[in-house]
Amino acid sequence: MTTSLPVNLKHAKDIHSGVDVPSLHEAVHPERTLWSATQLHELTVEVATTLATPLLDIVRFDTTERWWTRLALTMGVELWLLSWAPGQGTEPHDHGGASGAFTVTIGALHELYVHAGGPPRTADWSAGDTVAFGPQRAHQLRNTSARPAASVHAYSPPLRPVREYRALADFTGL
Ligand SMILES: [Fe+2]
View 1: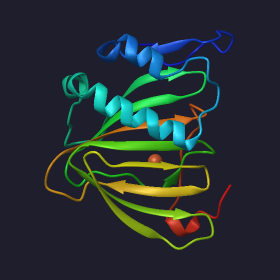
View 2 (view 1 turned 180 degrees about the horizontal axis):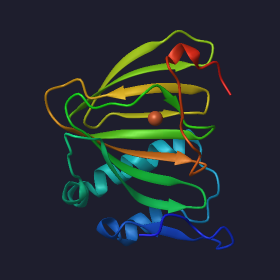
View 3 (view 1 turned 90 degrees about the vertical axis):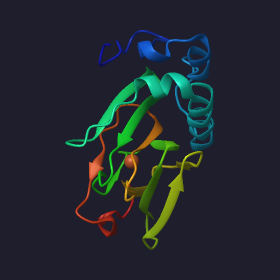
C-alpha cells in the first residue's frame, strides 16, 4: 500500500487489498471531496456490515501496542480498522478539524467526550453501535472490558493530524 495520494490525481482511491471489492470502491465515492458526519456514519455502518467477514480476516490484536490499518483513502475520506486489546485506549484528542464516525464491530468501547464549551460526558458502545461527530467534539476511547474490541473509523477531510490534550477539558473548540 502507498501512504499518500498524488494530490493532482482526481478521483483517486487507495484500497486495502483485503477489502478490494467493487462495493467498497463504490462506497467511498472517490468523486466526493467532503463528507458530512451523516455520510461518514453511513459509510462506517455499510463497511462494518457488508464487509464483516473480510474485516475479521484483516484484524489483528496486539497486547503490546494498539493496532490499526487503513482500509481506504480518497481525496475526501480516510477509512481505518482499529483493534483494542483489553485496557488499550487513546489519549484525549480531536481530529484536527475533520468530521468523523466510528462503528464498533467487535466487543465494546468506553468513550469520554466533550463538545466545545460543554461538560464532559461518557458513553458505552458495543458491537453494532455507531457514533458520528463534527469538528467541535473531542474524545478519548478505551476498551475497559475484558475482551478484545475492534472498530471501523472514517474521517473527512482525510489526513488531518490528530491533536492530543492532557485532559478533555482543555479542548475549547477550533
Ligand atoms: Fe478519535
